[in-house]
Image (cartoon, rainbow, N blue to C red):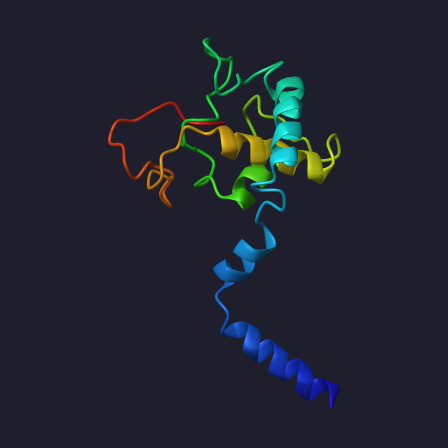
Length: 143
C-alpha cells in the first residue's frame, strides 16, 4: 500500500512545474516586514557598506557594484538567486559567501532591505536574461 501512495505522489509531483516549487521554497520570508527591513538596513551598513557596497542613498560610488539599480549579472534578481549569491559568494570575484558567518535570517533581512530600498520602478524588474525590461542602456551590473 505504501508503494502505491509513493507512486501516486511521484506522479503528482511530475505535473507541478519545478519553477513553482522553487519559487515557493525560496521567497524571502521577511519581505515587506518593516522591522526586518530596518534591521536589514543596519546589517547592510555593518556588513556590506562598510567594505564594498554603498547604501541606496549614498552620494559616492562604492568599491563594488550598486545593489539598488535592478541590474544583475548573477541571475535575474529573484529572492532565491540573491540569497544564493550572498550565501555562497561568486567565484573569482571579491564577493565572498556569508553562509556560516551570518545566520540565514540575517541574510534575508539584508535582502529585504536591498529590495525595499531599490530604485527599481514597477515594471522594470530584471528580465530572465538579467537585463532590465524598461531600459535599453547597459548599466553597471552586480558581482
